Length: 361
Ligand code: ATP
Ligand code: MG
Ligand code: MG
Image (cartoon, rainbow, N blue to C red; front, side, top):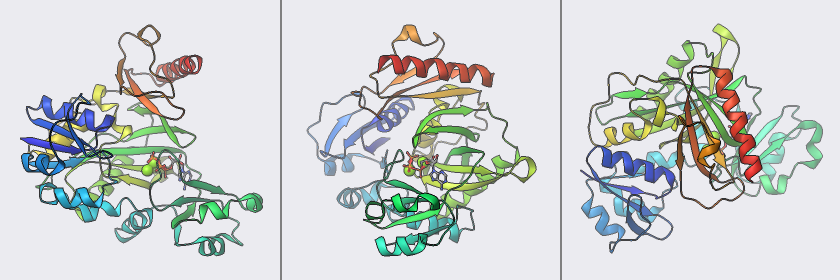
């Protein structure tokens, strides 16, 4: 089949490589310049988005911030209804969707301007996280409100655009599920993994290296099925959760939903027989999902702010993926996966490689 992906960042490139590996042809669109290009090449082809869409059997995306003009051009070739997907680009609609489906999230309210935000927070002895409705990622466009520091809160910034305020959750840990749904409604989920964030950015993921209560996997898969069915979604999708409560009382609160392949699924490139990119391509091309993913304990470390880590500084059995990006503070330039059965060893790997990154910065 011919597959067109909107977006040519690292997620688009990794999707493109999976498409080729399944014997499909794949082109990517640089959605900033509208240039069309082959996978692993930044040489534009003599093609418009219109002609690339005519060439394609199916169109998908690496990021959900779809431009209305692109949606108009590609609409007939999407397998998921874009109007549903666009709901997930607005945190107010995303939270409302969870409420409508009876899926737990942190208590919240929507505001459309500063005065509404101020009246919602005033007199509250609760800590809040305020998030712009649109456009935030890697912890950007978020503000923390603490009642004892309320006078310092930047209401003018946080209330400058519509958004949500939600209770700050004192979670035990953060986890996510990445899975895929196909056109006949079959789903296939990777195991729930633990994610460690630093300054709002995903730092590393532990897959099958955390002692998560077993019932959380079925809670997460239940949410996955509910959400993907409600959206008539086809492809890979990720849900981030907070874990609250202990042992048999532990439960999941949805933090956010990403209708695409996701950074917290990158471990599966090494730790699963079918990774999150493969699952997306299988979903798009009506290729049945595997009966088992045979996942293996894996740690994934994001490399942030340096061009790469030279090979003599990571274990020879590690699996690096460099995105070919210039280094900037806070920018993800690659990730390194490493298979290990021991959480302590995984943590030592993270500590060692993060020290290397600091030295290189
Ligand atoms: P991403 O890059 O994952 O899309 P984002 O910018 O959309 O990130 P969130 O996932 O909403 O941001 O928040 C980033 C991080 O901030 C979370 O992973 C979590 O560590 C922290 N955080 C967000 N909301 C809350 C909350 N209500 N309570 C406690 N911590 C929170
Ligand atoms: Mg997000
Ligand atoms: Mg997030």
